[in-house]
Length: 96
Image 1: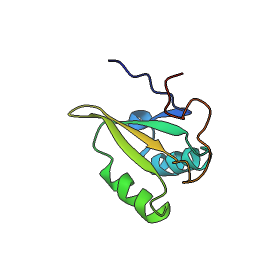
Image 2: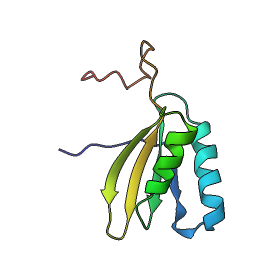
Image 3: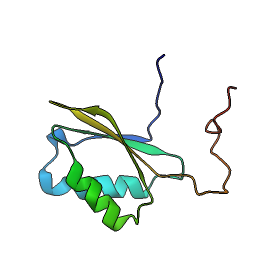
Image 4: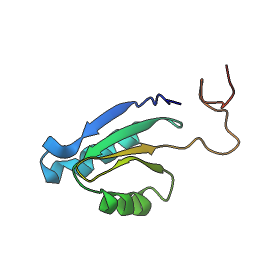
């Protein structure tokens, strides 16, 4: 079964100057609405970025590896929908 994922933005940091990567990623994340996600593409495991998200986002993010090397890493970084909030359109989990 194939699952199609939707991302508000894709950031391929392989061609971005290293000092500009994390600010760009955090700025893009900050502009996500609850239930949205960005796709990060990198040439190595972005684990240090994960730890920075833990420190700066107070754990209010999702982190899902879609591809884990050895040459390309793809990570879905999302903003969860707060508990008790309505799910975004198309995100209710039902089959329609």
